[in-house]
Length: 446
Ligand SMILES: Cc1cc2nc3c(=O)[nH]c(=O)nc-3n(C[C@H](O)[C@H](O)[C@H](O)COP(=O)(O)OP(=O)(O)OC[C@H]3O[C@@H](n4cnc5c(N)ncnc54)[C@H](O)[C@@H]3O)c2cc1C
Image 1 (spheres, helix red, strand yellow):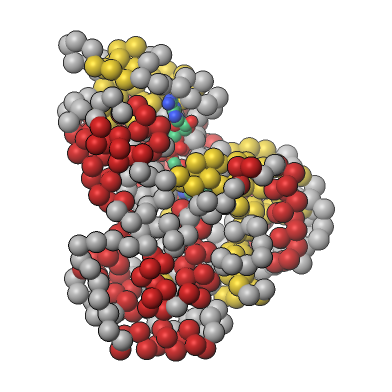
Image 2 (image 1 turned 60 degrees about the vertical axis):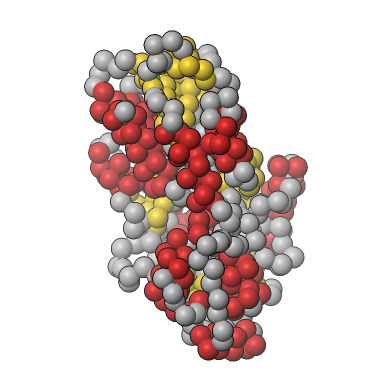
């Protein structure tokens, strides 16, 4: 038996590993990866002499997938958790507390927002349950359309956008309620009488579990273990451009040859290209998933520099800054606090920002200038590097769930092809791990 996984990001590597577990040592598994390395949006590189992550750096700690995978791979000792310091939001030229108890920044009441928004906005939030509310169960809308109408634009810009900018490289204008906030949509569909009440119902139950987890030596150790345990023939520099049916039921993968089954684990646009001759509806739905580009600047400051006592600084939309967020890595992660240097990650790029056109020098300059504004740190970094992430994150816009349903229905018609990736059921690493594993399970079952 011969199988191909097209795309060597985390979704594809997990699919290959799970295929190996199910099929045993005799199956041939080929991973075709277009770039010169595996990992996709996960990348660990050296800065000031030590490894750091310059793509994803964390995962949602309440989801089981990544800790379970680390345990399975003998890497349980790599699991780390943040220090517990909270981030702040930079709004109207000042650092303000990130309100607790919100659903992706949407509050269940005015009580925690008093230092973030003005009195008029607080009064609007307070009165929201008493004003007439209509929710259309048959349609979808942007998060902005819902939240601005009920709570006002300041809640959108200062509370919701900073969080959506981090998760999706998007904003409330590019992200839809049903795709990004499914528990809120369910509460609204079930007849919640106000947005306040819907948020209250949609909030997860209180938990003492850490909100985030990370990997001590960087995501690179997870990637290495997956490659090793999948015992796959990894072909980097192999951009697959065609998939065609061959007599006998196999699929011919351009550059790889005939296989009995294939997992596509690509960003939406490239999956669309490969499916265009095979299933029109799935390809069309994938083409309709917009992708946001972003860039990350990692800065290493001298040991003597005092970073603010925060895990990060998120920037409200509309501020006169180019960066959208700063992670104060040496404050956020106890294992990074032990390093000689003080580490900061500056993130750029909300959907539509022309980040791909900014040179490395411009990005480092903007990171330093903006960081000086929000932190007061003027020191010269001892090391800096830039990572561009063109088309890095899919936008779960209004109607996203219909597009996912069309993709999955189209794939179900193609015996021997499965699909995984960040555009399906969540952009985070845990969701991608789940999607790669599920694709492998379905392929073996078929
Ligand atoms: C800057 C940034 C920060 C993030 N931070 C976090 C975080 O802290 N926590 C979190 O949970 N998530 C985070 N994410 C999201 C998460 O990292 C990604 O959604 C996830 O890694 C995507 O994995 P994937 O395997 O589905 O896709 P990708 O990583 O995009 O992998 C797809 C692979 O397919 C390859 N490819 C494309 N076309 C072809 C072709 N024709 N043939 C062969 N190969 C091809 C690509 O080169 C790529 O390697 C972040 C994302 C970004 C961009």
